Image 1 (tube, protein in one colour):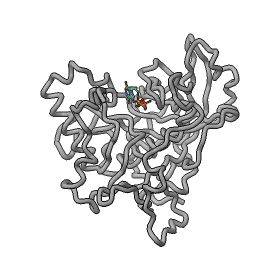
Image 2 (image 1 turned 45 degrees about the vertical axis):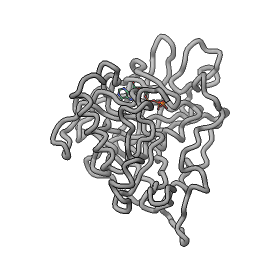
Image 3 (image 1 turned 45 degrees about the horizontal axis):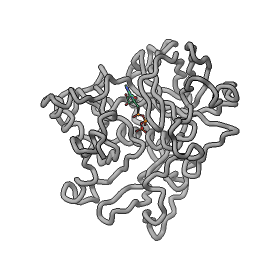
Image 4 (image 1 turned 30 degrees about the horizontal axis):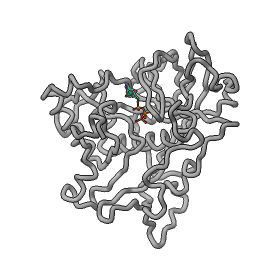
Length: 331
Ligand SMILES: Nc1ncnc2c1ncn2[C@@H]1O[C@H](COP(=O)(O)OP(=O)(O)OP(=O)(O)O)[C@@H](O)[C@H]1O
């Protein structure tokens, strides 16, 4: 049993199963995935600079018996340490879905050792969708988080995941990963940084502590593939964009929206800003369609602005460090 209800029109309520077909020069596979719970975060507080276990920060409901989406994998659009991102076209008819799903989406595959980090990113998208409905305005719309065991999907992973292969699979472990046997430690993983209420009894509510993701580690003998399905945006932010005052103004407003949602991004760099998807909606706060979107939330923290001294003490934490050395990759 989970606490939250998905809004009727949320893109997160539309799809419960996913089939990805790939047939490229490099690899060919069919992967059947089902919706999976995302990984809640503890709430960060600027009052004591600690994370707080809080039953309001719990899992989101996963839709059952919703649409089954079939995708044909396209080109690789980018990659990072956590995942690789591909374009994908819908290959079955889903014309009756409301809101409509664009024909082209992106699939972010977690590298085999980073499924937990992607589950956390998915949870932040859940928060942004529920809180002030920011998906579709300053972050791409999210259509869900899905997982599959490679063995159960019938993908011949013994061949496909071999490090001898001359090409990368979408879920291949990053060649420069310092610790290919485990996922990243998240900021709220350190027990001495977490405060739990004296009578902490979340019961049936699944928070970070009781989430199956909390103790997840990659199993090389039974690998899990995890993917996040998002609306497709455009090119990443470049030095050229950075010289345009109108671009800078829009990015500052996008950061403000994230700040008012109480989400600290914690990894705000040029590659994590992309041109907004074509179907971006009008922002209610700024009464405009933002031309830039923020992505990559696997290190983000949620804050409850109603209990913080916002903006006085909180801004430094929420601040996206836009146009700092970190943003340009100098630190
Ligand atoms: N929704 C999207 N639309 C278009 N391109 C995207 C989208 N999401 C990601 N990309 C592209 O893929 C790249 C990698 O994505 P992302 O930053 O999410 O990966 P990551 O592995 O989490 O990165 P990190 O190294 O920070 O962990 C982005 O820089 C961008 O170019």
